[in-house]
Every structure is written in C-alpha cells, then in structure tokens.
Image (cartoon, rainbow, N blue to C red; front, side):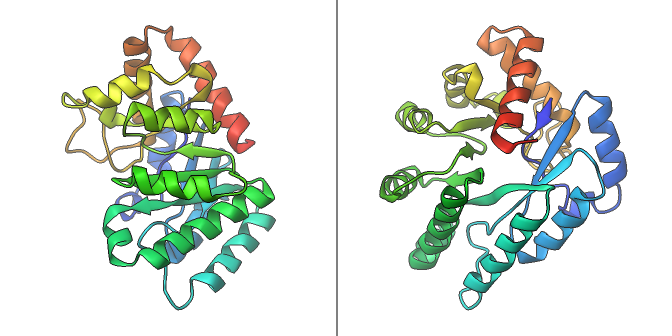
Length: 254
C-alpha cells in the first residue's frame, strides 16, 4: 500500500514521527507521499523525506497560503528544490478553496495556474485540492493549453465532475471519510472510479476512518480505507492494493 497524501510535517506529529512511520510500515504501507502547503512547511518536508527512505515529498503553495508580495520568488525557490532533490517527486498541494478564493480571487487563480502550467511544461505530477470550487476548477482546467498528470486529492463532487476528471487522465484519491455514515455520495463516486485510476490516501492527521474518529489519523490507517473500498467495490483486497500501489508508482515515479 502507498499512502499518497499524508502530512507528517504537521505539528501533531512533531514528537513521534519515527513511531508513526514505523507503524505505517508494520501495517503494510510501502511508501508515503508528503505534500508541502507553504514556505514554512517546505523545509520540514525536505528534511522528513530525506530522513526516511520510502517517504517522498511534493512542494507547492496551498490555497490561501500565498504571500501577495513574494509568491513569485517563493515559487522560484520551490522549482529549484523540485529540480535538484530526487526525493521531491511533484507539485503540491495546490488548488482552489472556497474561502480564500472569495477573499482574493486574482491572487488565488494566479498562484494556482502558474503552478499548474509549470508542472505541465516540465512533466511533473501535481496533487490538487478543491473545496466547494468544482465549477471554478473546471473553468481553470479548460483554460490550460496543456494539463499536467494529476492526482485529485480527497475527491468529492458530482458524477459529472468525476467524468471530466477521468476524461482528463487524472487519478482520484479517497480518504477515511469515505467510511463515514453520511458519505453515501463519496461511496458512489468511489465505486465509479476505474481501478487503474484509484489512489489510496489518509490526509493524516486529518480524516481518520470510522472507528478512529476523534483521534489523530496516521498513514497506517490507510489499510482500513483500502479494506472498505475493496468491500464496497466488490474487489479482492490484494487486487486493489496491487493496482493502487502501481498507480501511485506510475504517477509519481517512485
């Protein structure tokens, strides 16, 4: 199993990252991908991924985290890290989020689209965050002359949005919230993703699966989500694990 989205650099992991990573390996996880969210997080991500052999990083500016006066020079630093550190395997976490988009749309669109275009030009995979911005994201995608290889993180939305995402060749990730009692829409979406486009993720320390709600989520819990997805999709667990692991390796080149 590969947890394609975990924030090991979150302050909630500051005292026991070694133990968290060890528990992940014990649960059957073979790799973890840790996206950065801002410039402060960037250094921690580089440090963590170069400490653990099977932890990889992504670098980018998250929605709402861009500094209006320095984001372009910040991105130059990010591109330099991406080019020269082999443990940094893509761009992210980037995207659009409802609250910051309403507050400063010009900045949010610019930062996202510059990162999207750079990834497409240089053939880097991206992980994309979207929250209540399906329509806006769709419009951005249609404006691009070329789209990068992409992982839609913590997927939600309509079947029509899923169809567009799949038609664009993107991969789709699901987290522990797919197990929640009120998440019938997520389960419908998860059943409609072809096995060769499916990714596993935890978004740790967020979104713990049912049975662990109220706790800090960890990469090792990706097994619970994988078991749940195999059950609702009617697939053999090992088949799902093999496919999602290969999907992650293909997308991120790990």
